Image (cartoon, rainbow, N blue to C red):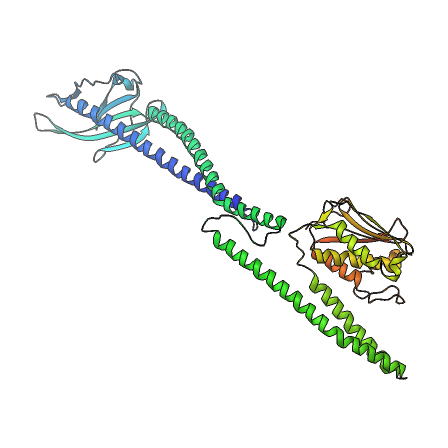
Length: 452
């Protein structure tokens, strides 16, 4: 079974294999035991008949062996009745039961009593019991004779076949019951893992900070460790954000001073040195803004659905107060109940950068829409040539160097989108400018949700 396959299937396969092997071994053992028992009964039956036959063997004064035995089983008297006896003496004709009719059992001279299987009348297998006897005549002459009794193995074979059919049926029912019990045991055994999976899904959908629920003692340590890990991760993430924010804000003042010093140098006639200082300060600020934006990003997972229309309204309200934003018509086509599982700060960062980029290029109109679970920001600006659409999200790349900014907005948007497992697509808008659409990564054309 290949790696990564289902644990349930592995356990079911192991249970089925174990049950099958056990049933085969048990069935084979029972069949062999039945065969030995049947052979023992046949041997006992032949021993009983031998006693009756041996009691009737007589030796005449002339040395002729005769049998006056009156065997109780009528099969000895019926031709090919299934029970046979034969008395052999070297050099003399054999004395046979009437059941042998015109057949004769193979002649062998055993050294002692033997029980075996040979070919009997009509080439059918028979169980035979042979005894070596010595008779002494009145003249003192010793006669060695072999007494052979045989019984057809047909009855034993038939009984064994019938027993085998019943055994197969019984073991099939037993194996089915055992497998059903294994399935039930497996379901009960793995149920805590299913409960843990549901608890994780509930935690993500409800915004809970830890796993809740009652779990068996074997699973509870895992749940406790996960809760501790989640708490530690949340604290570490918050501390990292706070440190990055503190560092960025702490450096902003020295950068402002450097920019002012650069401008003073330019005003005093030292343009080359002043421009170098200004350029270096802007590069530092660019890196700080980028790292601060990345620090504000969440982990790509959100436990709470963030209202989309409310966040878009805040972004539009802020940008519409800027000089460029006041002259534009802002259109928000988002249902009131629309919400996405994206952290509030991340969603504000994403919409803010997209709307701010549209503000810089729009002529008179910007539209923010959410339809078929696709978030779209469009403008009626000049748009982007087809061959440059794939380049506009690259870090620090500006297609128009005359515009203000560092070219980080769309790069930050791309990183945010990728962290949530979404896709971003740039194309020409129906308004004439650029359209930026965000959807789930599985199928952009038929995205079902922005939820992660």
